[in-house]
Amino acid sequence: MTLTLPKWFDLHTHFRQGPAMASYVQAHLDMGCAGALAMPNTQPPVSRISGAAESDGWSIESYSAELRAAGAHAFEQLIVPLYLTRQTTAFMIREGAASGLLRACKYYPPHGTTNSEHGMPMDNLIGGEVFRAMEEYGIVLCIHGEQHALSGPDYIDAQQNAETRFYTERMPRLLAAHPKLRIVCEHITTRTAAEFVVGAPEHVGATITPQHLLYTLGHLIQGLKYHLYCLPIVKFQDDRAALRAAVTKAGQSKFFAGTDSAPHTTKATACGCAAGCFTGGCAPQLYAMAFEEAGVDLASADGEDLFERFLSLNGPAFYGFPASTQQFQMEKAASKSVLLETPAGPVTPLPLGMGIELTWRMVR
Image (cartoon, rainbow, N blue to C red):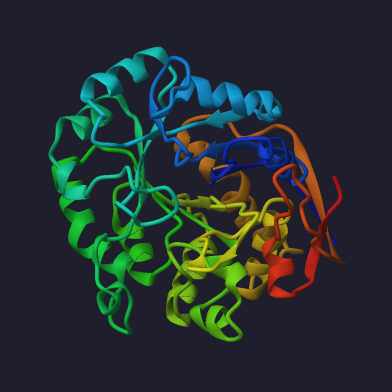
């Protein structure tokens, strides 16, 4: 069985900075990726619109130039969001929108994930001038939807977790204060978040990663599969079932691909584990495996349509650019992931870290 699909867009990924950038970009190109939304939680962060990189931050202009020099010029679309920090102003939003450089802004809960210490509480932004300017100019708000500063028992237990609290306590207030704000709920992991997006206006969408469609918390802790450790962490079977139902509903237009692929040359450290699953080179295969596990027959016209919507069509439609006219192919055949060798050191892809064989392989 062979699938021929429009090239797809990874609308949430990490290319980092430094000499390994070219390896990470190439891994995306190798898996039929036509474009990317590159996360701004670099060191230092992407916290300005234009100008040269400085010691306290990149600009969208300077980081985009670095990415293109590393091979991202081959992408049809490259979006770099502005990292929302305490220094972000409504003037910056207006300036960025007028220049054409600003298409999205990224909200990070303070200390909620890798390099997110520059973020601010959502309560400081709701009702403020920055969100009002984004609303006025149609700038997309990309949200890492977890409540910050929770204790261990509040961060995750059987009844609630940081994500469910964010989507029940913060998101309704955000929509009420900014009803026209375009929002992408990134890497959602719970039934609560999926149901929120389904019930929200059409200008609210969501990305879902391959790992959250494939795995649960049990997979993570059984044997401590630390290559599966990411933030937000994988959740429970009921949550995975809700995510699978959302992406495989006929005609759905709100959910699309965003891998949150996050390369780490050192995953396990003396004081913990770096957050992020690396799925460069293998994301479409993993997504196909997830759809099949959800009961979708990818050999059927209906099944292929569902997969194409999620992987190749919904994301471009949400962000307002055309789907790719180029194609890539995958075939139903066993394949293995290998270490990605980079100038900064080797990176372990998720399937290799999990000890699994892919059931699809890239053809071209």
